[in-house]
Every structure is written in C-alpha cells, then in structure tokens.
Image 1 (cartoon, helix red, strand yellow):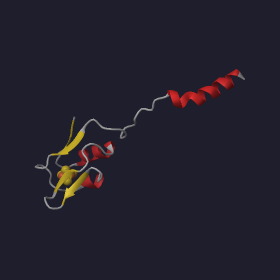
Image 2 (cartoon, helix red, strand yellow):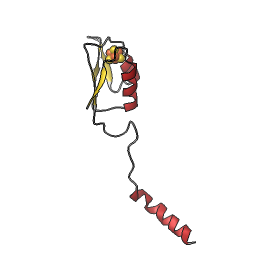
Image 3 (cartoon, protein in one colour):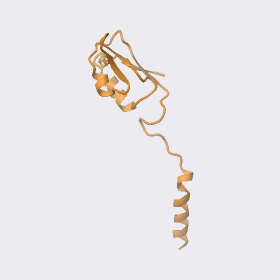
Image 4 (cartoon, protein in one colour):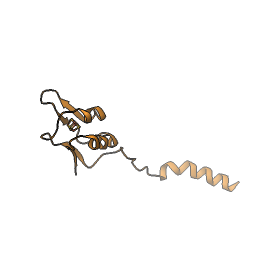
Length: 92
Ligand code: SF4
C-alpha cells in the first residue's frame, strides 16, 4: 500500500522535477550555415532537401541561405553532405 502511494506521489511530481533535454534538430542552434557562392554550381539539391533554409536564386543560379540561424539540423547536414561541390559549411 505504501509503495503504491509513494509511486503515485512520484508520478504526480515527476513533471516538475525533470528537465527535458533538447533532441537533435530541436532548440536554438549556436552555429550558422553559409554557402560559398563562388563554388555553387546551382544544382538545387540543397533547396530540394531543405527548402526552409536554402533557396536557389533564379537570376544568379546560385543557392542562398534564407534562414541561417536555424532549421532542421538533420536536413541541413544532409544538404551539406550531398552538395556536389561541398560549398555549404557551418560557421560557429
Ligand atoms: Fe549550390 Fe551545393 Fe546547393 Fe547545389 S547543393 S545549389 S552546388 S550549394
């Protein structure tokens, strides 16, 4: 009986005791992404993968970062890894 009561009390106060840690891709990033536009060949891969952060400028045919302070980090990483000329980088 006491065990059931203690378990119930712990269950009730648990939300107030625990601090949720941000998961990968959540929260504010302390790094920014940028594109070396001289190297960009305008393939559009980054925009396809993460349109929230990258946009292909139709005039210059170069990609630009439209949201450098954030976005889904996993997708930004994927865009970096798949850029054929490796011109997307993180800056701290
Ligand atoms: Fe340019 Fe790389 Fe984006 Fe292709 S993936 S548009 S080369 S920045």
